[in-house]
Length: 264
Image 1 (cartoon, rainbow, N blue to C red):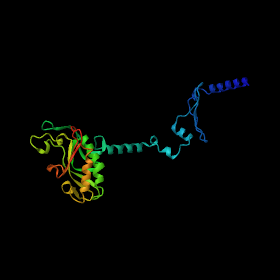
Image 2: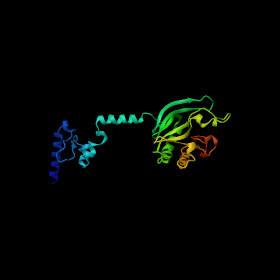
Image 3: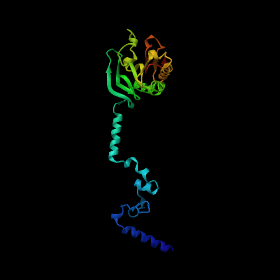
Image 4: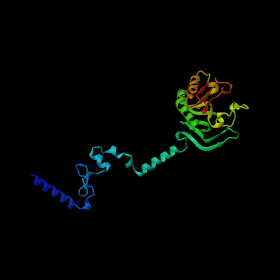
């Protein structure tokens, strides 16, 4: 019996050797029974299953329509269209966020000491909500504004006038002192870290101002919700209850020097 086994091994080795190197690396065509194809290995090596993903999945019963939709099988036309859509979405995005639309304007020099922005952006809209005028600020402030609009302003006004459409910007970057008082410290507006919102444009064409809306029965709840909601994304939040300088607008800033938030 042992002698017969040895003879069989010798015959198999001779058959493999006779196959020749020209056929040793060629894949065996797939049969009609769906058996996984193998690659004929060189002499002395063990044959391995083909590495083709389609063949492997077919053998495992995972072929069909679901497999055919995988990205690496998409046509060049589809790939080109996908890249075009990505470029279109990215156009106009600033601060690395597609929901913040505007343009990067680089360094803004201040006319007096303490003013200016190192890497400024001019923002046109955040989370699909347009600004009444392009607002210049740094990215930290733009990101805070975007977060506030998405999480507070839009939800607060969702049931009023068809919802929020735009923000009325009263002030953004301006090289000036706080409240324009002579001898006062440089305002956060002068550092690109602040924005003032005086009203909210609704989808039905109407506008709710901070001055009138703060005490109005229809909008006071929404106004206070937005005011409170800003105290988180922003470090300083001032509204009509703060002082006479803020009766008609919300002041939001991202002052770096504060240890905690200041909201009034």
